[in-house]
Length: 195
Image (cartoon, rainbow, N blue to C red):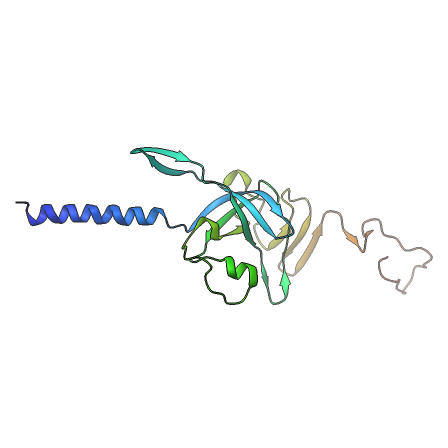
């Protein structure tokens, strides 16, 4: 007859394996790489950037997770304002997976019933744009904040009480750098606005 300790150890290992197997089916978040941007639906196709270990006949193998399709994007938006941009192939992101099926909400908005009973599924992801790996890290200022292109050659910076616009500036299609007013005299008067 087996002892209580032997039976408990066996039960513990069975439970531990069951919990591990359950956990492998739960998706939470994974870094990804944008493959394509669909401007009409405002979704991306994303290649998960970490391979998954799977067992084939008891032999572990690493496999790419299939490309995720129709993934809604997350950009800063609230209070009637948005900061929007068009993602491009190669952009890195973090895909988070909803607790429940998002299909009915995605199609209709508001509060909806679940169209399917799936949980933490690969098909219920949101792409949060703006995370990056070390090879793709941007130039970040030591203080203040900056809205800039990836090269850091054009943008707007705010630091303390100063606002700086760098790069080519156009106002209503006219270059600010080359803007001149003609037919004015020097002195205490003012000219019209930028044309």
